Image (tube, rainbow over all chains, first blue to last red; front, top):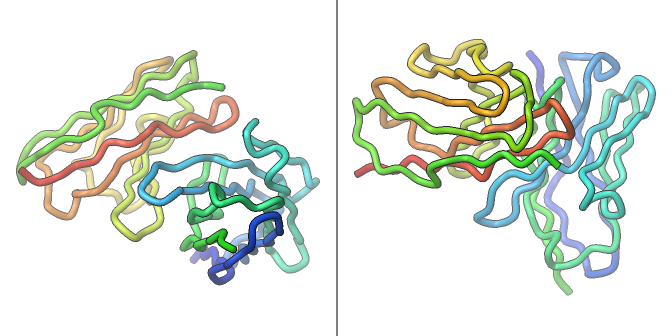
Length: 115
Length: 106
């Protein structure tokens, strides 16, 4: 069974960074894309970007190009997303997902930005 | 950016209803469209991939159709457990989601 286990909730101060993790079990991430999606409180889903863990190639939505950095460690079958220069507007649930499209989802992690 | 315009924003429905919701892409996306269901407090779940292919375990009351720019998700014989927000997603270009259709009970 494929499972995506995300790291715990984060509280970050404005101007700082956080790094989220997404550990995959039951499937080799070299054979798929890893996506990240956010959902601001009470709002819809927003695609952030994806990484091809086999070669490290990344694609980002335009608005996240200077906000998010996606990496992956195939030895631990884990994907990461670093969010930089946090602002209150970055407060959201962040999901990792896997597949050609984001077909298999993690449970999501709440990131709260507050001083 | 490929914009996915989803309609309606919300629907008030009754158990047993036939429900139809739509997504219109701002450019041709072929059949590279998925539909997702998100219940309150949960992660989205894949229902339909490739515009019309039902994902494993999804009840056959869920049907996806369309190609090019116009896509439809139909729920025949609506059940209470289907109350949720439904999102379309195109992945022909950089993926983009529709804004969602929320199903609520009358």
